[in-house]
Image: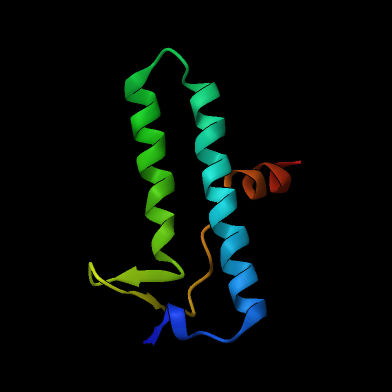
Length: 84
């Protein structure tokens, strides 16, 4: 695995940053959806945060790029766009 801080692939890094921004945006959307329901909020956020492991993993000290060939988990926006 490659250390994230040593990655020189600007396109890959842009893709990762965009994906993580979308995950944060999903969490923001969930806060609106589950305004008065803490249990629902926690359940939805836990499902979203699991997606962080698609591109990156950590040993607790360093971040590493994963070389995944699996299909990337979709963000909420992508799921909604596919349902149209």
